Image (cartoon, rainbow, N blue to C red; front, side, top):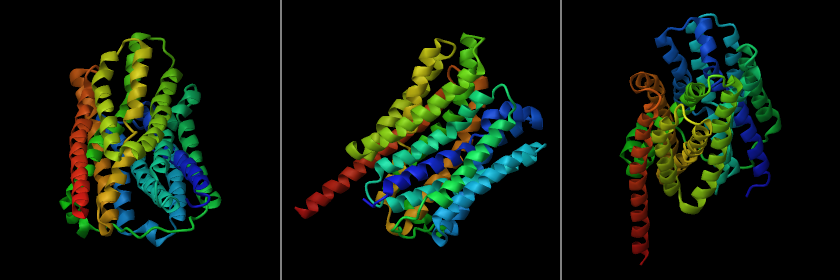
Length: 405
């Protein structure tokens, strides 16, 4: 263990928590932005999809040019967080939907320099046995993504600008922490560049693609759940009790996405080191798929019942997230690990755009009672992939043992 690694993890996690508040900073105030910008129904869909689109664009550009390899990754993260804070703050000046959505896309581009770069810095501090460390980092990402809901608890009686201002201040704080508090790791990792020429090797590697398919199924569910569970809670709670205060719904969303999700990430990191990555992902996706199907049954029913199932869903939907990337890094050849991880992340976030925008379409057809059942398709297919991945991994181990005999 490198001296100071856990202290570094604390600062990286705190910076990630603060910076990722930018992801849903506009989503939680979407009703207000719809009125301010006079959004059409098609523009509303672009508002939801803008950050993932920007993230994919930024991840491809950053990986292709190897920005985190050519420059100090700590500086790259600090600059990205600062730019994200600035772009987010400019929403206060946007008076048209086009400019607002473009700013959200650019915010997504900046976040591509935050999350992947934080993982790279973490890998420098934890060259081995980083399961728990990655779990804590993803927990920080999860908690940070839910922070706008926490801010809304205190700003429900004020205007939407406060949410934007607070999230920008948090991202600025992340830049300060990374640039002036966090120190560089005493060791560096090998350069793992992205290359379009190596994509063919990635897709022809069966265990890599099985892990990718598992991740794609996971991502089909994750961000659609995070985006729409607050709206579902609003409709369900007000149906059961019309006088429910907005702050209670915001607090519930923060607990489900942030607190429960953070606990799920840390627990997933701990458990995966004991039972194996494939087993953890299978168990996690099995639980979350069941939650996808059952959550609608609680619509308009007892609030405590909806909350209980939602909290279980919030824990299970993210507990396996880090393990898919870890699995790819273990089975891919060294020459294209960087390409494999970038490919996984970009395709995964592209998928979220479709699932996020599919929910309102299906909701109009079948109502809130059954809309989330369509998300269960992702984890179910992910389970099939990870069972095959586990079998492939087992056969390789058995073959190795037979070779040495």
